[in-house]
Length: 290
Ligand code: 5GP
Image 1 (cartoon, rainbow, N blue to C red):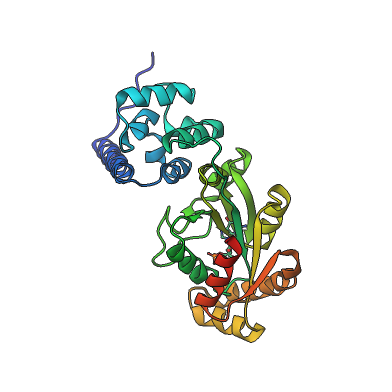
Image 2 (cartoon, rainbow, N blue to C red):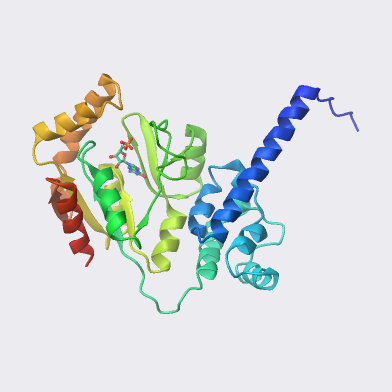
């Protein structure tokens, strides 16, 4: 057997640091699960966070509150997951099975509803979403994957899963996205497994996505409640986008151009809500779910 090339001390040190960092990350994830963090959120991270991808499925199951070794063995067997399996090796079917088993699925329970919120960039979707989540804590918010770089204050796994193009294309090829689209030069998509799992568990799920994605959902999930959030006027939209100062001028110009196209498509939605104030828009949307 040929000798393996000797690693220099610097590479070994880097390897040790990476391993330590991965262990730290897994300990953080286990703590999150032990304190009631949603398992579907962690499972969704397996595709974008290598440290999570390498975590053993058994470790994830045992980290969930109230699950000991015996119950973990039963859950793994029921979901047909091998003892040595790591999160990155799970198929979509195994993921939904695990989420159901860990949430103690109630037979005959009501499936949640899918709520799609769309509307031009700058209309205030994120503020309305924040208000909706505060008013309806049971609403499951889908965290999208994107190739766009994070803005200041945005956190990976919370606001978006920030991934590179290769990873995103793998997700498309692996059928892991419910819908996806290219917007202003970047890719955006909705990971399907956490959405399915939350709906199966009876939670309503909110997707905040752009027009092309909303069209794909209309075709694949015709029962979804599709809401178009409109600005009070075109001038207000221009003001909001220009006042945001999170993007350079050429990006804003591109977003405004797309906004014109998006505004013309509002007739494709089941409902139209004008965002005159965040409170009023959120209230109207919640009334649609009731
Ligand atoms: P931003 O870069 O401002 O966060 O988002 C740009 C646009 O992409 C927004 O209109 C937002 O609603 C949309 N978007 C965010 N996530 C997704 C997704 O998963 N799929 C699609 N189709 N659009 C998304």
